[in-house]
Length: 107
Image 1 (cartoon, one colour):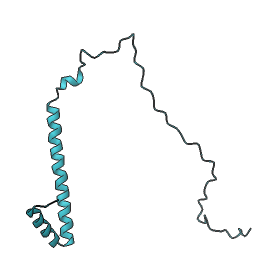
Image 2 (tube, helix red, strand yellow):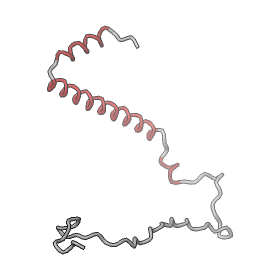
Image 3 (cartoon, rainbow, N blue to C red):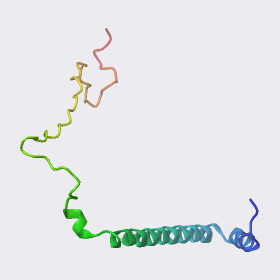
Image 4 (cartoon, helix red, strand yellow):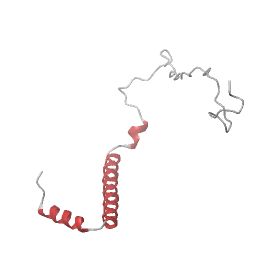
């Protein structure tokens, strides 16, 4: 991809910086970019909310059917969780000599 002369000049200037200055530049540029992205996202979300009528959030369209007493809605199903079976392995020793031979272990 071809680069512009201004980018090439910026790259050459960056190469002349010492490591500490390069690091500071990268951090500053990164946080500046993140800030700009958050600001732009905030503006777009604000524009979306301005186009939404708040009353529409709390009213139902006449076309939508609402459940009647003759048609009760079923309650939501609960998620079931599976428990792992208890391990039957022998518990590990917690003594300070775990894994080390004991004086009487010559057998």
